[in-house]
Amino acid sequence: MDGVHDLGGAEGFGPVPPLTAAQSSAEPFAEPWEGKAFVIGALAARISGGNLHAFRHAIERVPPPEYLAGYWNRWTIGAQTMMEDSGIVTDEEVRARAARLSGRDVPEPPPPTPDKPQMPSGGAGNLRSRDTPPAFAVGDRVRVADLHPTGHTRLPRYVRRRTGTVTVMQPCQVFPDTAAHFAGENPQHCYTVDFDSRELWGPGAEPFHLSIDLFEPYLEPER
Amino acid sequence: MTSAPEHLDPALRVEALASLLIERGLLDEATIETFVKTYEQSVGPMNGAKVVAKAWTDPEYRARLLADGTGAIGELGFKGPQGEHIVVLENTPALHHVVVCTLCSCYPWPVLGLPPSWYKDPAYRSRVVREPRRVLREFGLDLDDGVEIRVHDSSSEVRYMVLPERPAGTEHYSEAELADLVTRDAMVGVAKVAVR
Image (cartoon, rainbow over all chains, first blue to last red; front, side):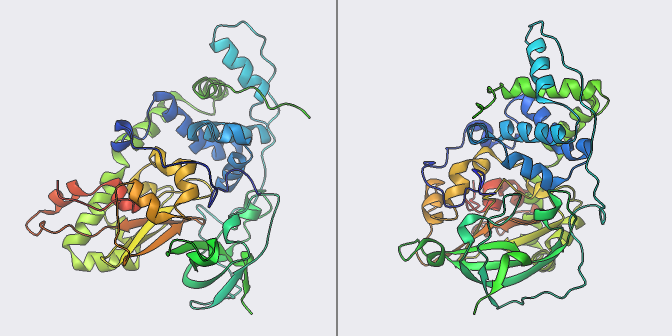
């Protein structure tokens, strides 16, 4: 989906925030609730019967103001969304519980009926194999397709319709675009594609190279 | 049009969600504590620093690391979530690698732990794929014009870690002393390793 999460090249976010003392150290959580948020998100796929891709897609669906309100905020709302989708909790329940924890005596709604997604898995993790040989090889020029799926994709907007060169064959992997919707693992070949910065950002761009890992269905041969 | 639901304080949302999940037997305090402790104490940039220091002192290890990052990192016992396939990128005087995830915040957890705030910030994610030299300068890293910059957007399950250049004047350092110099930022590619 062409959502707020697809940030590559977006303008207006200002300078990268300076490192605070807490960030300079290796401490991953600035406050205790962030640690708890991390664990809930890390376990959300297991609890809801989902997967990593569905979790990413749930985070992408967080409304833009909430998405931009902070990492652990969107992470937690994403985890809750995935659990709502599987009938583990409802937003009404979470809000009622939050009110009660804040000392307000509100009634709690009944829990939903679990309805977890069912999708066969080829095993742990995301590395898979595929019988069909790869369509592209290192050195091939490829054009990125002009795809705008309404669901989950790992094809960012800023490389669509651009031409680059395959530089590395990466391992074949579960296809996020289908797995996120429980429509099958559908493993795909994956390639590191290198782009000249001017191909992405025009003739006035800073000179550099951009490498990104793209799944085969995102690519077309450059004619 | 329905209006967006009212913003709930994230700390309170976490508390409410945790309390419902614990009540349903889907989560427990001990699991929370174990996870948090693991990422606070055992999984962090000190792991990646050991990998870098070993690569600097053991040419055969360095060769294995660049050929098969996941395998060579696994030799030191570092594996786990977000580390299924780790590729190590070697910085040289002529080529500088820097890593980002524009779509979320993918990061090589087994070697670097959880990402710092700036890595997850929209400013870094939006800008480093468009004006990396300027962004690096904001981090205090001013690269010569002749240095080629290569930005890596982590869009698949491949995770990237940078092998920084070994600083001059460290020839007599032990592996442990070298590891102490290596920073998280250098392994993402927004800094160089310096002698302190």
